[in-house]
Amino acid sequence: MTTLTQTVMNALPSDIVSQMAGLLGETPSATTSGITAAVPALLAGALQQNSRGTGAANLLGLVNKATAGGNPLDKVGSMLSDERSRNAFATQGQGLAKSLLGGNFDGVTKAVTGATKMSANSVSTILAFLAPLVLGAIGRATGPMPTAAGVQSWLSNERGTILRALPDGLGSLFGLGGAASAAAAAVTAPTQTSRIMPWILGAIVLGLLAFFGLRTCSVPHQPGLLPHVTLQLPGGGSIDVGQNSIGYGVAKFLESSDPAPKTFLFDNLNFDTASNALTAESRPTVNALIAILKAYPNVRCRIVGYTDNQGDPAANQRLSEGRAQSVKQEFVNGGISADRIATQGMGEANPVADNATEEGRAENRRVEIHILKKK
Image (cartoon, rainbow, N blue to C red; front, side, top):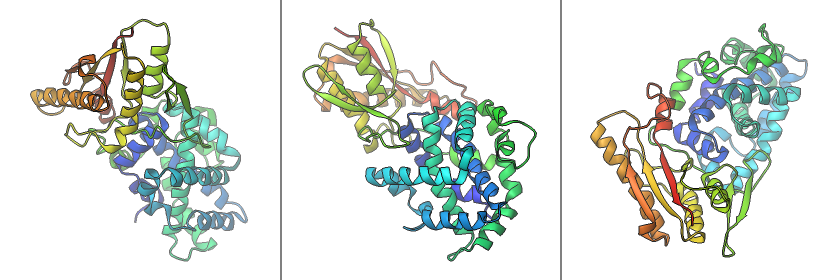
């Protein structure tokens, strides 16, 4: 039998997790940790309501609301790729998350923030994104015409599974058991995820290879979404970028009096698997940097590619060089003179994380831009 948690996780393959990471401005590994904590937390909120007199009826109302336009589990990918749908989904999801968690919304946000080291805004967004999926999973489990009795029965049967997946301390927060206080939920992400069944991490982490994350830089600030700002550039131009994105960081650095050199990590760059080809979703990040380099014509930079330590070292070296060259070519195609951009492939050298873990390897597969000269 597929559990409610499994049903939600099955709707979140690695490319969806990478898209979410990009929108949040978080790493895929941190986003994975946030998801694995948030799903059982939302289900615990449903359990808490289910234990009350009219709770099952209230939950049925939430299920019907979440699935009114079709089950959200079936349209996660299309929703993320469309800006208007994404923003509407986030707005609805925020209300559903608060209805599920009630007075525990802030406590859950704080606990997951402490556990994963993500920003509170990112955790709030994850809760808003997952709430309709959790309700969709309940709706799917209870059949095409769900009833309050069916909701109550299904959640009661899954109580043990949900509590086992729940991070430390949150059971106490919901009054569902557990000796630890809610504050104890702010444990390290590795300790927390070690309590979650191996299939959960496996289902999400597998496939993160070659994904560096995606960010749609044109997304306006909506409730629960990463704030975006418009930065004015020399010459009268402007760019719309997410706070803490590479475009924001490079623009602010070039505007400042801080000396070069300085290195920035591409947090929103995605290649086809085992390929040098950039995906279409990487375009907003590339376009923002092209605009910045045009506004600062004296800037010189180097694009540096890295891989993890999996596979043949010589092949990894070639792959890292090819990816650096691909980014440079995009800049040249956008009107930046080729002599302003050097490239370098470092293969598996200079790891920034542990190659013994999938999360660490994902961080080591990266591309950086080194600003060598400002003026």
